Image (cartoon, rainbow, N blue to C red; front, top):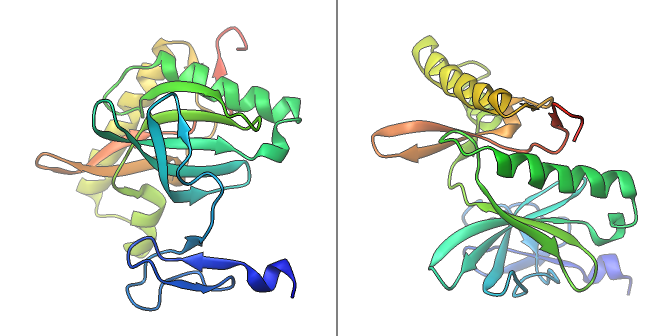
Length: 205
C-alpha cells in the first residue's frame, strides 16, 4: 500500500478521520487537516505548544498554539523544512519577522518572536486572529461589499499602511487575503493587516 493511500485527514472539531482526498468534514463542514502533522504537540519558545493547523501555503503552514505561561493563544507560522536550504526564501521569512516587529499598531498583526526548530525549520510567533480574511468576506458577499462597510475597512487598512510607511516599510503585497477582519468590542470588522513577507524597508532590509 502506498503512502498516499494510508495518509489521512482529520477534523479538528469532531476528531473523526477521513481519506486523504477529503477536504471538509461531512458532519460539520470544518476544513480538514493532516491527521498526524509532525509539529502538533511541539513546543517553541519554551512554553508555546502547537495545537492545530489553521492555514497552509506554498512556504509553510500556520498553526494555532497556546502559550502556557500567560494563558493565551498565538499563531505560529512554520517555514517548510525542505525550504530552509533556500537562502532567498529564508531571507524573505526572516525579513517578514524583522519588519513586522517594527510596527506596533492596532491594525497590524503583532509579531512576538522568531526562531528555529531542532529540525532546522524556521518559525514566527504572532498574534492569533479569530476572524475571516477580507478575501473570504468578499466571496461570501458575492464579490462586493456595501459602500459604508467597504469604506470602514478601507480606512483601517490606510491607517495600517500609513503606520508602516512611517517606519519606512512598504508592504508590496497588500491584497484581500492579507487583510483579516476580526470582531472587537462593538466592531465586527476590525482590520488586521498581515504577511509582510515581501515587504521592503527604506534601506532595503
